Image (cartoon, rainbow, N blue to C red; front, side, top):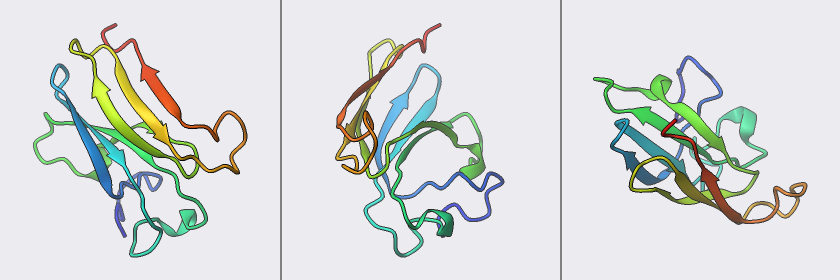
Length: 121
C-alpha cells in the first residue's frame, strides 16, 4: 500500500500526476490523480471515497521519504487537482479543481480555479 509505514498515517501519496517546482524555496509541488481504489491506491480507511491532495516536498532534504511531505490542499471528494502553476515571482500558486462529486455539498460540487496567495510574505 502506497505510503504504508509513514509516521503520520493520514499521509497517503498515490498516483502523482502533476509536478511543479518552486525554485525560490526549493520545494516540489506534487498533485495527485487517484484513478481507482484497487491495487493499494487507497488505504483501507478511505476505500469509500476518492480524495486527491496536493503535497509539497522540501528538496533540500538529502534523502526525503513520505514523512517529509507537507500537505498543502485536500480537494473535494471525487475531484482531481490539475494544472498547478506558479507566478514568475513564486508569490502565487494557481490550480484547478476538476470533476468533483455531484453528491458533494455546495460549494464543493463545482469545478473551479483556486488561487493561493501570500507566499512572498
